[in-house]
Length: 133
Ligand code: CMP
Image 1: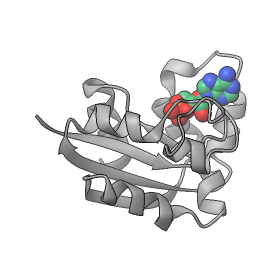
Image 2 (image 1 turned 180 degrees about the vertical axis):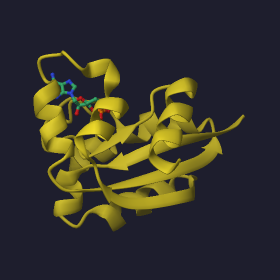
Image 3 (image 1 turned 90 degrees about the vertical axis):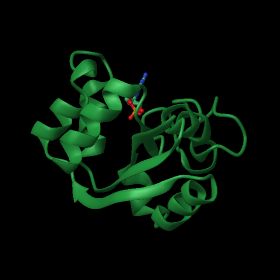
Image 4 (image 1 turned 120 degrees about the vertical axis):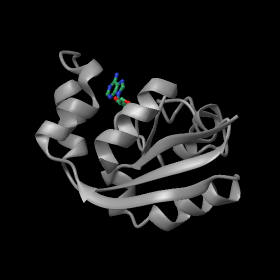
């Protein structure tokens, strides 16, 4: 089934001029870019976007990091987009991400892992709405 999902290219990757390389991998893997946005995340949006993580011990670090620089959001479509993007992105911890995945190539650590990908149908719809409303 054709689906839509959301990719965020995080501040560590945008600072290193890796936007083009990451989007090239996305396009080469069958995703179509439906919507694209370069922006900075404010505190309110960070709290909404990552609401499920508020209160966890890494949350303050995650929020500071996401507010530390430019972010690129891409709304993507393809068959089984949500699962296929999670596969291409790899494990949250870039040390554990399979070779050839985006996080294995561009991630610096579990926190600064270069990209975010929606993890399900409901979160994809919620995140696309939050970013592109
Ligand atoms: P992301 O896919 O953006 O979703 C939540 C983010 O929290 C995750 O990627 C990581 O960057 C971050 N995260 C998850 N667990 C940890 C952790 N133990 N320490 C630091 N950051 C974490």
